[in-house]
Amino acid sequence: MDDLLVKHLLGETSAREQQQVEEWLAESPDHALYFAQLQQVWESSRQLASESAVNEDQAWQRFRQRIQPVEEKKPVIRLQWLRVAATLTLLIALGWAISQWIGGGEKVQEMAVSTVRNVLVDSLPDGTTVTLNKNSSLHYPSRFTGKQRPVRLQGEAFFNVKPDKEKPFVITVNDVEVTVLGTSFNIRTDEKGRTEVVVETGRVRVSHAGRTIELQANERTLIASADSTLQKESQPDKLYNYYRTREFVCNDTPLWKLAEVLNEAYGVEITLTTDYARSQRINTTFNNESLERVLNLISETCGVQISRTGNQIEIR
Image (tube, rainbow, N blue to C red):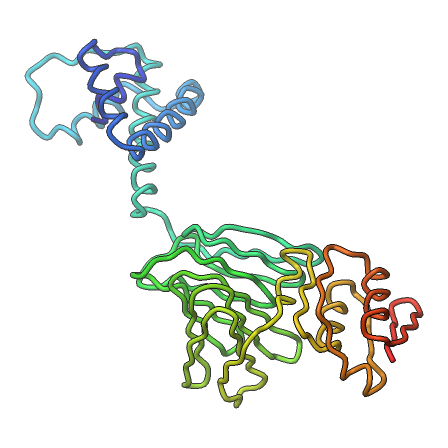
């Protein structure tokens, strides 16, 4: 089929051969993708051929001898040198492209993506999507080989993992390992070394210090130290999602917990200075509101007083 495709690109196919090419392309989307890659290499080869200093006739003969161990009885029809050069370049590049396509020739490289001030959405080689929060980084291979899909996280990220029962997706963060087959969940670490895992859909397995637990949708676990016991608890609110949705969804959420998230989101330092303020709980959703608007709504809803000096905010 490769010979026919090359002839097709050269414009030398007969009517019957042209029909064969068209039927082959219609058989499978993979065939169409293969031909598109081939055509791209072909277009590039035109320029490469015109710049090549290689003796095209000799190279062509060497190439023919390698792919045809039995000497041909038929006379070799010489093409115009530019066509020969382009075809030779095309076939060599095609071999490389095929090896890349089937994953046989590509070296696995360490890839990394990181953020400082902005949230970033990215796709991994397997189709998994990752939303990386500010001041976070993710390391992963250029392609997943072996029996797992391993990545390493620092900071916070939301994963929507593409299902693959034969190859689990494994995230290493601090000394915690999270294993999934196909689900969506959030992982967060902080400067104190704490790791939080919140599951939005599906199930994940969390391993730490020789212990393992399974979390289902709307459950979370918090590993606060090296000797922490793995425990799961319900996750009633969706505050963990604020950097993806720009919403602060509170469902009987303690005010101190909302304050922690607001500190991170707006780069401020909110302090609850009274027991009354710390005991307050809130049920509401702030949808992409300014900090001033959020603070005013907190004051009205919870009956607390708020004072602000620059980035220092006191709730009492």
